Image (cartoon, rainbow, N blue to C red; front, top):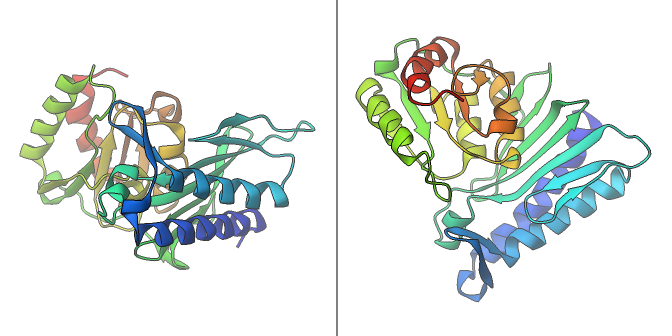
Length: 264
């Protein structure tokens, strides 16, 4: 395992231990609303601190973009940035619904090069290094081989804070529901992308996500052989937050449904 990836795994496992402990006593948590329907708990903040400490101990000059604490610029002209979501799926976590994850990615010279997504409830560790494949608990994973959308299970995520595109999304949802074998919406985009990577889904799409939701999962999906792009199939999904990830033949079939609804 690449040493930087190894450090990220260590950080993710520390965060996971904090999350698992807190999950045993949800009633005791302090929670506040960042904005309507967007919550942060003390667990998000404790987990993020543990991740940042582990990464900065090993790499003090690297930059950091983290969901709760924001942006810390790199030092000494280092062109590395860690992109961190300490708890992707906070709403699920606060309800005791065990679908959430820790997401850590490393961006080097504009490209995601290392990725970890850790599901602490199931002890599933997804990892990828650019050009080296993707793994679940150290076993190589690959995207599914299905080629007909009508046979596919597709993941998605509903809009939850920005409803300007709700009508376009609902049109996509309706059309995808009619075209695919089934739709699922569990509530952690980082895990959804990993599920494309290991074949649990044949495809996934969501709109208006943040870089920390997508950075690690997108590399894991790509390294498993999935195609990843925005809603018209191009790069730039990290900036727009609109993403489609799917096994190659299904990717094209999904775009035919999604792209007409929203040209971004």
